Image (tube, rainbow, N blue to C red; front, side, top):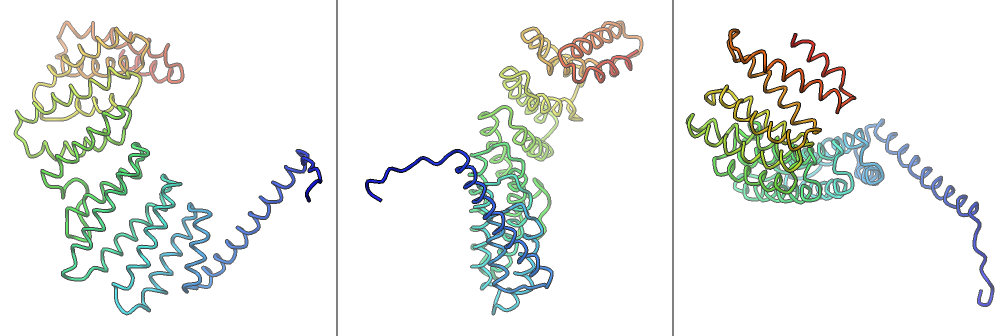
Length: 348
């Protein structure tokens, strides 16, 4: 009322009101959950049950058994009553909207990605003969949606995995396309390599982008001659060197470097190891207390030892250097001290 002075509620009253509101929400959620589970138990596949699963999944998108129930409602209850597969499309498009809204809030929930994949595959099957353009349009739009999600979180491995699935499906007319990247054309592989370059240059710690790059390059290089493969691999060593020098403590670039070193059929392995050891030794001098340069020096020198003949006078020095690197690692990385000392013990 006008002229009546309001009194500020006490902290206890505010807390009590908050608890009462939370209790009301919990009670509403439990009531909704109970009704949905009871309908699931009765195998109720009606439109009313579908609507209730929508409400429940908005509140709890991690409820995997309700996503499963929702698919059963569509498959066994609603779709059989429709006059043609094309009439399924509005319902499936609604589920695409539901899942993208859920993914924006919960981008790393497996069950949402799983339901979206099922929805897209089912939608693709509703386009009849002569309407393949509609299917391709939907899948192309999906690529753009995933790229938008990767703009927000470029290291979301769920989104990267889904991207691989989409690219394979777009590249093959088969309902069961070969795994990524076998179905991709040379032009598509080149485009995907460029995409990973963009993501890596934005963040050298993007392990998912480095991993994607290994898949693309393995496929590209399988089509090249030995000399061209070696030339391109050397370019990759230069590329990853930028990441190693930018942040020597980040493991993503180092793991990619080890993948490059491990590749077979790339010429003189000993010369390669010696060349890369010089690069890493220079970095270790600049960053003497950084774990990954030391770890890589120990790893690659041990590999070099395995290539040298037993009579090589260099073996003793390399063995001693490996032990020194491991001892230094035990000092700067105490959580793994036991592992480093065990490795040093195995060297003899």
